[in-house]
Length: 133
Image 1 (cartoon, rainbow, N blue to C red):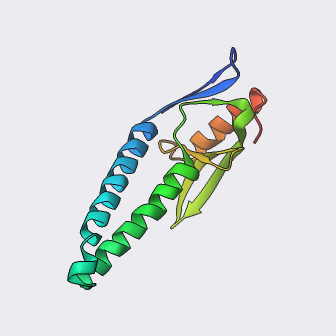
Image 2 (image 1 turned 120 degrees about the vertical axis):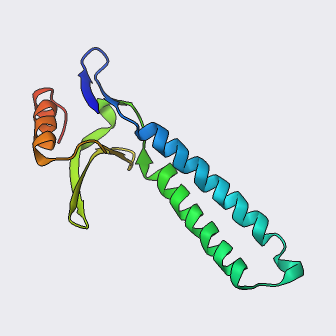
């Protein structure tokens, strides 16, 4: 992952594979949701059984995951400084995850940032260029 500060248009440029992975996850969740809808479309004629309950749960999970991807996560590769709230870190299951908090309520994950040393170096770059933390 390469993170650069572009001074000409005052933006942060991030080169990683988050955009591709978000597209793949969105596509698979939409496909899964469509499959769940098709499998649940014959409930009035066949009745509601165990398989239909499983497909209903899978469809509901897909809807929740799609909401999360569309409204809570960002895959922008070029982020204007006006959108940046700051760098954040979150610990879940004993693993630290780093992200950029945006003003619109979304988070831009920094998946390739693995250690605290890398996070501190990025934080230093943000401070040097006047980017909020």
